Length: 280
Ligand SMILES: NC(=O)c1ccc[n+]([C@@H]2O[C@H](COP(=O)([O-])OP(=O)(O)OC[C@H]3O[C@@H](n4cnc5c(N)ncnc54)[C@H](OP(=O)(O)O)[C@@H]3O)[C@@H](O)[C@H]2O)c1
Image (cartoon, rainbow, N blue to C red; front, top):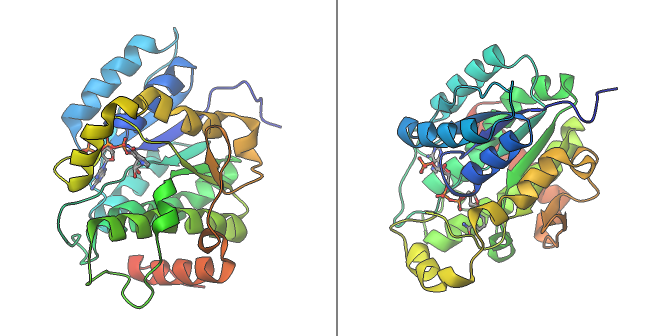
């Protein structure tokens, strides 16, 4: 049996800013080996520098990796690199996410919010499943209570009838459904969580950011927003979860739609087809 106090190898996406950067620093401070993934090499270098200042003596801070999740090819290339670099992966934290101002499509022609927030972590996780399994690993995905306002628009998944919030809420519901179905299909310890409302650069340039600027004093710090991620990545609860959805370091309250096994199964099969994996 693995030593519960041994340092973990943690792959953390969206580590260049906000909640992910705070989690990368805290997990490093606790002696874990965090491979930070982000879009911008410059921003990642700044986070790496913070990780180095808190790393316990003797802990090597891995070089970060860049990947733009608006391209499935970039996600595949990232997975290849991670498989080469990491003989074990104890935790995959799918944290990267966005909300955008107007409808855009990814390099592969998918609605961008669905592509970055759902299809990218769906593909990355599937490509790393065997390594996670052989490591006795777990998967933590940053969702949101926004899933409660979401629907999976099965008749218009790419949201040709688009709205920023509609797209975001659909993607965050997809995160919870993915988590449940991942667990059912692979047996991996998979959890999703709501970080709270957090003062980050999330949604910069969108109406959400204007709203969050007004509400900023009421928001949590990135460090507070990272607490549930850090807990699910390291606590025994994250390794044998009682729930698929958490908030404030305890079980959360997913909607009925987020717990619909048939919807989760259909979304998985459709997503597999969209990213070019067998639908099974
Ligand atoms: N802030 C909140 O109140 C809140 C509430 C609920 C849920 N969440 C969720 O928390 C997660 C982290 O958000 P945050 O608040 O920390 O926001 P943030 O400060 O904007 O950080 C988002 C992270 O995702 C990365 N990212 C965005 N688009 C990407 C792409 N195309 N490819 C690769 N990486 C990309 C960003 O990289 P760059 O640095 O290059 O942009 C950044 O590292 C998201 O999944 C979000 O949905 C946030």
